[in-house]
Image (cartoon, rainbow, N blue to C red; front, side, top):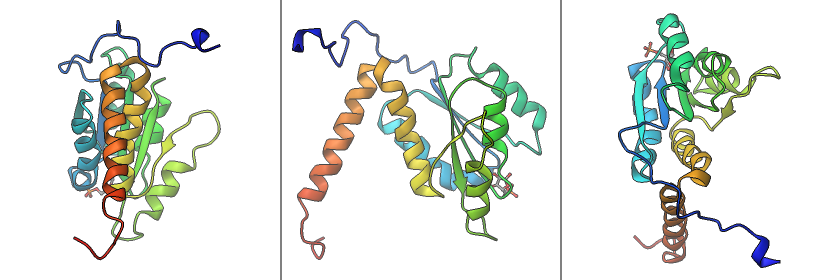
Length: 181
Ligand code: RP5
């Protein structure tokens, strides 16, 4: 019966406090920003409170452990970790937290990010990393997926996601001829 189905949105749930980050976006190097900015842009456009940090698994391993261990206690609910090459940042981060970790393989110069992808996606059973596509698409989708993880408890984020989907659909439908600008 319809009446037994809980409403999709509970109006009593509070809107996100923008001063309390819910998503931590970390990356192995400043050089990853060109890619990872697409995750951050998506979080911004969906109204998801977030923070951004360079945390390197091999150059600052103690900082990585500290960040991952403290993330949940600081109120984060999802971590997006981008790295390239021997990209162990997402996996090591996931090993030190119970928060869901989304991994973004950054496109490397030598192997076009296939090294990053395989390093991140091939986690042994027990410590999952939700791995996205290489590069810009993966970063943008990590931002969207983080918002989708948060959406059930945050009606404003859910509404932003619904609007984003609708606008994306309308954009395609309104330009059926690919030759038109
Ligand atoms: C990884 O090594 C980083 O995630 C980056 O993608 C790659 C290269 O880093 P830089 O040498 O540009 O700092 O740790």
